[in-house]
Image 1 (cartoon, rainbow over the protein chains, first blue to last red):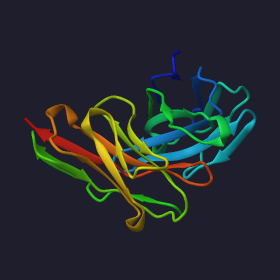
Image 2 (image 1 turned 60 degrees about the vertical axis):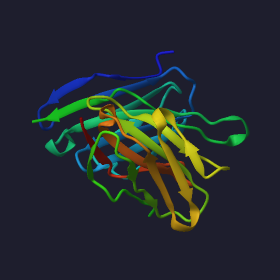
Image 3 (image 1 turned 120 degrees about the horizontal axis):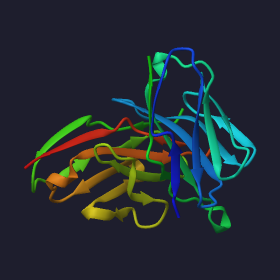
Image 4 (image 1 turned 120 degrees about the vertical axis):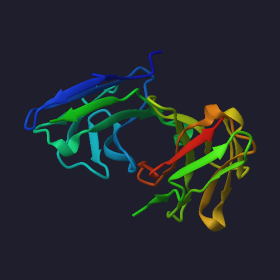
Amino acid sequence: NAGVTQTPKFRVLKTGQSMTLLCAQDMNHEYMYWYRQDPGMGLRLIHYSVGEGTTAKGEVPDGYNVSRLKKQNFLLGLESAAPSQTSVYFCASRPILAGGSTDTQYFGPGTRLTVL
Amino acid sequence: AQSVSQHNHHVILSEAASLELGCNYSYGGTVNLFWYVQYPGQHLQLLLKYFSGDPLVKGIKGFEAEFIKSKFSFNLRKPSVQWSDTAEYFCAVINRDDKIIFGKGTRLHILP
């Protein structure tokens, strides 16, 4: 298993440009999450998904959109990038276990995005 | 809104010293609690987790944490730290909406 993978690893954008970050997991997990990590702020949840075709807002959703068309993929889009979106973005996935209990998140390696 | 507080933002210790990092959460219901570690340039890795049962949880690399429900706390401990424990540590809690809320992290620096 590759686990959770993220594409690309690094990207530099100009203000106003758009881009999509791809997160893929091969563990058949139901839940997927997008976080941004900024110094002194910890990880803040942008959007998450509890299953294919569903998405929900997290703590800091403004300026981002997401889609979960396939169970294994969770896309994060920036329609018009701003310097405030310079950050490291982490994707994570989590399974739902038998009986509905929950388990740990598994994190991807991160995408470092710089917006000039 | 549910929150997670880590009181120590930056901790500096010498090797072999004992470690305790504080974590408090605000949610009053059933919680699932985690400690993650992030080594420089790497992604988050799970150290330990608490879902139910024994409130003293043992994790990898000699770390342990104690869930004290009455204090809404889940402090991380290690009896004797090593230089390789230099990293950033995050406490996290799953709330009833299945969101995982992270604290702001504690940066630990171990002096050789």
